[in-house]
Image (tube, rainbow, N blue to C red):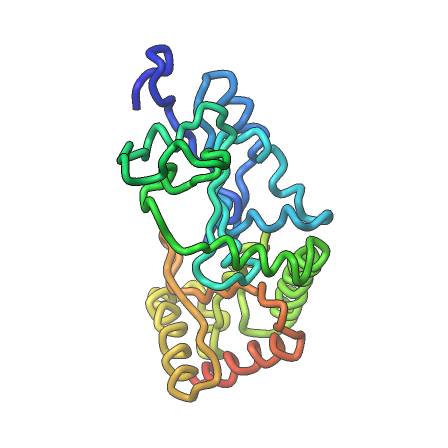
Amino acid sequence: MSDTTKGAVPFLVSCTSGTTVQGAFDPLDRIADVCEKHKLWMHVDAAWGGSVLFSKCHRHLMKGVERANSVAWNPHKMLTAGLQCSVLLLQDTTNLLKKCHCANASYLFQQDKFYDVNLDIGDKSVQCSRKVDCLKMWLMWKAVGSSGFEERVDKAFANVRYLTEKMKKTEGFKILKEPEFVNLCFWYLPPSLRGKELADDYDDRLATVAPIIKERMMKQGSMMVGYQPLGNKVNFFRVTVFSPLVSKKDMDFFLDEIERLGKDL
């Protein structure tokens, strides 16, 4: 992008709060220090993790987000609002979005209305007009309140802690990394692979486990859980525990079912 000394858009630094795979959070405060020093635009992709701000216990993961120039957040993710429900927040006093997207069409968003025309957001977006997606969030907020959202977030963290600890105590399950958020990545090792980590064909055999188990669970209609490789890590299961309807009984079934479907591999 262009140099800020010419009055153009500054270089952009994109941070992540709650990555899709492992749920990691970037250190926003430290990144903000660098951005302020070098006059960089700081954007935070908080689509997945932004909802932790509702929780007094877990909002520290987003410390420094108030210093960002822009933040993206999807209530349709962790808060389970109906698809689609997305938010873009900017610390901007120069009407930047309007400057970027305004079509200046005389038949659209006339400027001589009786109300404050700054409330017209159509000329501030690429789409010009769209469904009132914010209504979903507004209705949810009215129904459960901030305390209800906090309860959902805290329950999700409690559930993933329960599942993690249960997995550690159950033979055959291997966690890739201690979860920072509500994402849990793990392998299931059938009895035939336990203790065989040094075998030449270990990774090749392990890579087939998750796909076969998923095929079996889908054909039997018991569950549907995603898997993927990542870098040099072969196929592993990835589960996100965030629905307010999930119970400990459900998580116990989850582990038992994976073991049942994969123990003969």
